[in-house]
Length: 279
Image: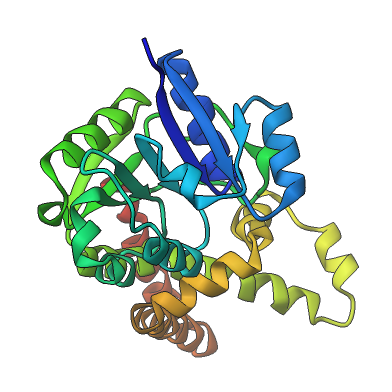
């Protein structure tokens, strides 16, 4: 029986981990990798992430399934070039913003696409950072599913469920606003925290005192700047709103500390504790 051909554009953390996860579910996949970074191509082949490396999108368009696991600007560019797809080909993008990607898909190939955002990742990148269990027990948001073909919807649901993900449907506009608060603004905060320490006159001495709390909050400041520049650009309006909301809360804290309003500060912190009743 012929194997299912799976094209992966972008052989880093997300694409590499996806290949490893799918390999655990079935031996009937044949992975064709595509990446402009030749080192990534070599590593992906060596690690068994890809069975074959292609330098042509034409070869990928022969695949049954194509995953786009590259920065969001690159996804939009590739989408315009995938114009020779079979009606049964399923293209799934893994971009961290969704509305501009969804709106950029040409009408004649729209049914082929499923716009997805797996809510997982690490600060590391490249094929060597790939993890077989990266997606397990995580949420994947599937956006604007009414625009996807029936075959594509069913297949995407099956694929993500098979690797242990929980599926949450959502429209792309709503997704981008929510993602700004729970993902994009925290990255901005982490970059700001890291830079605020590095700008001090004795940063090494400060960092020597760093405990688990600081390391947890600054960890994602190690994330790929080019990738996150793209995300911030794509979700600019929602990101600015989320940063403004954060600044309002920081000003409240600043004022209470400045005025020695310790009881009010305690109540403010107590309100924040309630977040973990939801999580």
